[in-house]
Length: 258
Image 1 (cartoon, helix red, strand yellow):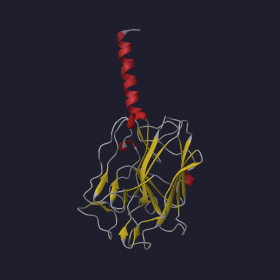
Image 2 (spheres, one colour):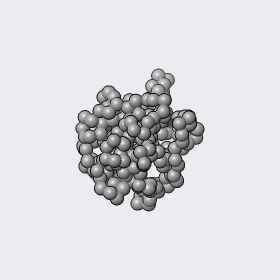
Image 3 (cartoon, helix red, strand yellow):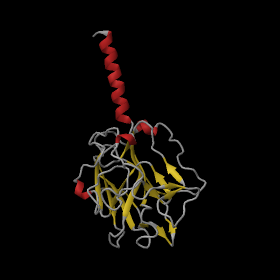
Image 4 (cartoon, rainbow, N blue to C red):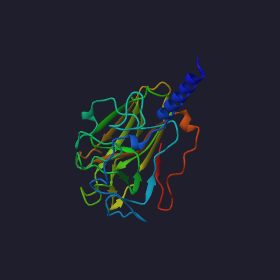
């Protein structure tokens, strides 16, 4: 084989590897602009204000990170945006569909989506829907070892709407085995924002699918604008590198549930 051909092959392989292991928000189908209820960065988020935030979880740019997406991703092999669901689109949200953007809340339907804020924290990446929703992701496209994310109710509804900003629960299962189930989470409790809850679990070797159910908390589906911030799958390459500390601690801490 000629030297020039070898060089071209090496460049192509490097480009393919770089494309396959790094998820990029810019490659997704994102909101055009600020959203129907623009988010606002403040010094300290207020419980009575919708979509203001004082903490940010930035996109994780480690190689080997695959973000969950809706529209811009692909499956079973993820693309630069991330991994898209394999189940029918009609199941992705219980109201406000069809979903037409990534990294956004359900809003009030098409054309009214918002950036994801949960409990005063802005998540650059994530998925949002309305209960009752089911999304199923094919895990056969990579050797995923771990899932991480933060669940809660979108700040776009609390506390002025629906009394407590909606309520919901989240169930994560791998190949039919429940890996995590949240308690019922409200947007606000006693007028105070409810923190996003961290979800973190290992994915068994040879796993075939991840199912996420966003439930209605047992009180009906009204105002249940559910969101999963920074929802991502990690392989060995990602886990070999410590993530940057994305969350400042000045304004509080996230709950953790395992």
